[in-house]
Amino acid sequence: MDVTVRPWFAFRKISSLLFLIIIQTSCTKQNTQTPSGDAYSSPKSATVQAVLPSEIVEVVEYYHAAFDHYFVTAMPEEIAALDSGRFTGWQRTGYRFNVVAPGAALTQTSPVCRFYGRPEAGLDSHFYSASPDECQQVKDRFSASWQFESDEVFRAILPNLSTGACPSGSRPIYRLWNQRADSNHRYTTDRTVFDQMVAQGYVAEGYGTSSLPVVMCSPEGSPGASGPIKLSCEEARFLKLINLYRAQFGIAPLVASSKATLAARWHSNDMGVNRYFSHTDSLGRDPYERTAQFGFGYCQGENAAAGNYGATETFCQWKLSPGHAGNMQGGHFRSIGIGRAIVGGSEYGVYWSTPFGVGYDATDKIEEPVTDEPGCVMPTSLPGC
Image (cartoon, rainbow, N blue to C red; front, side, top):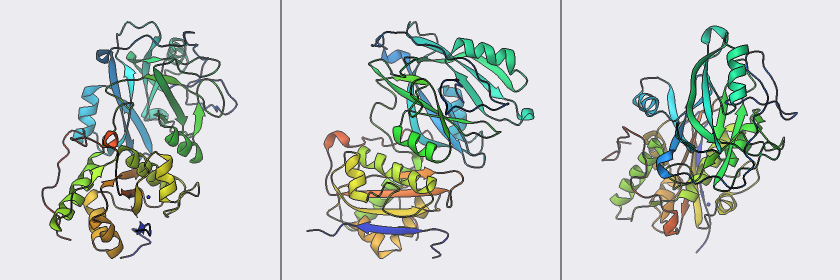
């Protein structure tokens, strides 16, 4: 197998792993095709008004590898269309976060407007803003490039204008701009994703400090990112395959760990963004140090791969390698993290990392169903490889 096309290796421990454009910091750059305007200040209360579960909706993130674009939506009809393949090329990234439902009567939230970048203007992206003033400026100044779609696709909690601090009961939403003519932004509540996108050349924008600006705040609570994570469809398919494989040898199935999975996703994305292939990450950490810093203290091994889009290809590649197969068959392993990352512009496109653990915490277990992606079909038997 040509490792220059599909690199992989096993690692084992030896022992008895522009929604919103705001002019506010020197790091914010402007583009003639990208609207810009004044910032919208937040309410001054330090604690957000209680948000009922019925008022929380979930934003789901997608990525299009050919466009190298990210897209988020909270609209059920758009999520269903994207998941069904109606809009080809879009895949879930596995990331999501909470926002407030449109029409909710919460004084500390602001409606989020949405615009679509016209393809005839060299754009094909969506623009969201939680500032009513900015929404109006886009309508007035950029209508030739940005088509208005809605005054309120959802609502968002606003941070303090001066500090960027989110009220108690909410968490920061970061915005990162690709600095290209085909203007596209990524929104995330994940600090590691923030760091990786900045390293990739994206510009962070928002309120507060130039090093870590905040654009909006996400309410805590069900059903979003503050709750237990779920595996993506391909990650869940790999978990099923490895446990079918272990069953052939009479070995107990592995439990999917949230903490180990977050560490694995970070590592997979880091390999693509920083263009390397190693068990030692860009911060100099080995699998044990990396997973421990994500709160997973049981790592005793790790597999990694690059270039395989799906779970079946990755499973087969490792099954045919004695070192990787040894980790997958390891009877002393009880838990696993599964991280798959699609990284646009990277050398191999798709990266996988699976740290193995000799234990797990019951509160860290990803409960069934391990994925909530619609239409995800689990394998019932092993592939012929």
